[in-house]
Length: 473
Image (cartoon, rainbow, N blue to C red; front, side, top):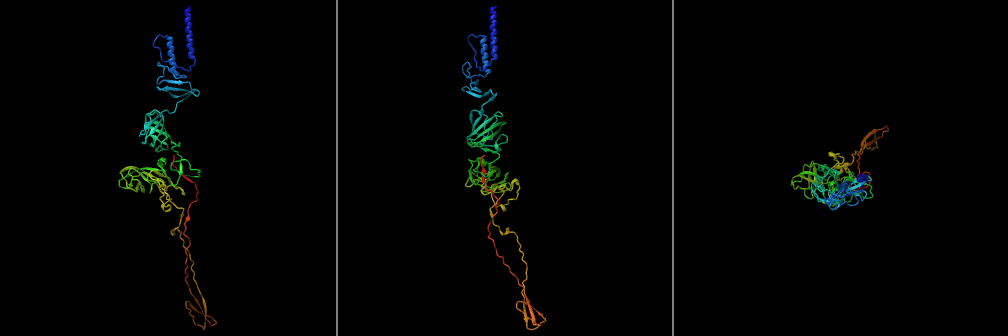
């Protein structure tokens, strides 16, 4: 009986101990996952070892030191560890060599804080540059091949940070490659882009940051915008506008903004490009570049949907070409792009914007073609011609000049004739003969010229300001 009571007491104590263990909070659990395979083990010991191993799994091997719960007494590739030595605790995974941090568990704020990105890879630029092939978030894009897409193997919403090491053209597409400003962009070495995958091969580049820290696009100030202001210093991203030449390599975005890419039909040996979609604003002197166009070619004239070149084409077919609206700039060449010269000038809208001429700036009064972008005309002074004088009809009052003389004759009835006069005779009661003569004379008036013919000013009331052009995004 006593033995039986002792056995029951021991069993009760064990049960109470297990129950207390269930009620006590466990701050760490790294029980061994290796069960004995030799010798004799009691069922209780085995059960306790199994429970400790399960507790380690449940708690992600939580503890202040790295777990070594395998039979090899070492960490196993893929093993999870909740590192409680730091606050907040950090969840880690063993990659076979090192413990990699997966994220932090903020127990105070009850937040999961995973790292953004991680790792780096280099991808060679291609038409479709697959940035999903590597799982790392930060990738270097190497090469100059034009990119039209970033692949389709990513998870929707996945974000990638791309660092470009060269001048890599990116082609805008409304779905597959949405770029800031809805336009093509050519990177420079050091530019960084953030892209988000939208699914079905579609990507949204939310931002492109140049190596100098400036953003690529400021929607409020498109490149090529001319600004007037009382600036103490030249504003950032602008230059003075005085017709100078800028390097295309230094200002690729500005060059793209002030150049127009068109497609037209070329005939080798002929100097006319036909079937051009948009010739608005194009005019004589603008440089033309592209396949089938000789070096140094400029626009000679524009008519309808055709452009006459200064040189003949060297290829046949429908070809793409570029018209440089602002020209090469003073002293520039095919490696440069010009800036508007706004010194001493006011700006007027193109007279045929929208396709219909307003006839406010005709060539007869403007002195140039007001349909051409970056054209200039007008003059600060003007000398009137005779044809520009108002019509004046002077009025001259007619007059008759008369001159009379009285002559006395010796006897009544005699007639006195005076040379140059018409004489008449009158008789008076005194018996004396008197004669009066009268004559008419014409008058000649000579008017002398006057005035110096000097030019007179025609400048409107004007206030002077700094003129700058936006050349950087």
